[in-house]
Amino acid sequence: MTNSKKTSKANIAKRAIAKAAIMATTANVNSACFFVIHQPKLPKGAEKLRKF
Image (cartoon, rainbow, N blue to C red):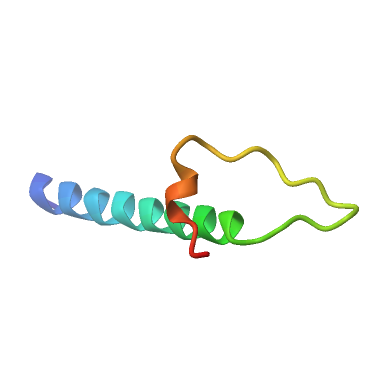
């Protein structure tokens, strides 16, 4: 495998991980915690992802 193909696959994997992280943060921002379950603090800038 050439170096450019390895780099391309690495970039695709990085983008996929970044999208998954944004989706998880968005879901966490738009939900409330249950009575028993603790909701951890959100990272800075997560408030921008709110939908309400």
